[in-house]
Length: 364
Image 1 (cartoon, helix red, strand yellow):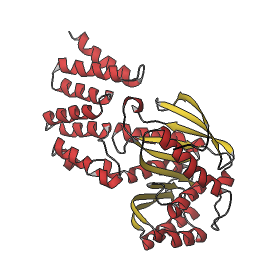
Image 2: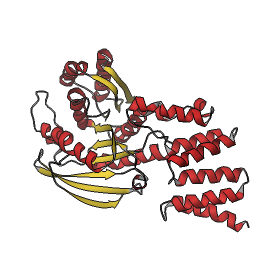
Image 3: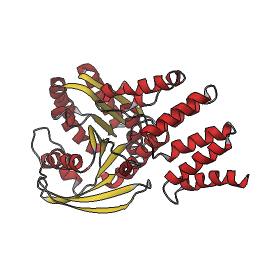
Image 4: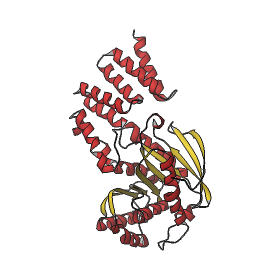
């Protein structure tokens, strides 16, 4: 695909300790330069894997939280798959996100930038798997409304927080949502539980429930003890967990053993329309559940995990822990040392596994 704009790229270090890149896009749709920030998943450069993309509006303040939430949920426990995070900072928020329901207004240029310039650029430069999410908070959620109603194939999941509908938006959605088949599409909307937005969210929920858009999966959530600012972060976290609810495997499946675990994740391919790889965190958590009663099955699972995540320090380290508990010190030392070698130099994880590998040398 020939790109319709030029760009300048900068590299820096992210808060999550991974490579972060900043691009300056010369947008024809907006007739201005727009900065975007990209956070790649852990281990992106060591694999040929493709990833879903989370696009974050209000990127000057929502992006860092989204990066942290994605890192925690994907790396630590496997609640969600690893994602590329794209932050879109504002230049003129009122111009770009003030939506009129007459199909006119400068926001149309911003919609065109996202659809015709930004998304094609991300797909051409990075390894994406076609599963795209859009996050909007407060008035930025108006962008979600527009794409959900008029371009339903553009994003697979919409996460909105601090949102609700008034009479004009309700009328707009009533006209548009019933026209489409939302196969394998997700909608999460949450807001603070007091004030007019809480009322607006309830109206939004009632509208979607009554329309029952074909094949759309949705969840609406009031957060009674949160402020409008609080729900910015809470909405990202809760929305991601809803969209990828099935990624956290039930204990009842885990306890059946490795083959059932593999079959469970293979069944998710059809639900999400991309090839699902068992997350590192899910392998580690599942091995921990198996270990007390089925240690050999836990080892089998961790070794399988290393066939699909060969560069994972965490999985090597988990094998070291299993062998240490089994008092197989040579194997424990071997896998702790491999975990140290696979770790990011001078990181906390590297220090941990360096200590554990040296512990066995001190015991000789």
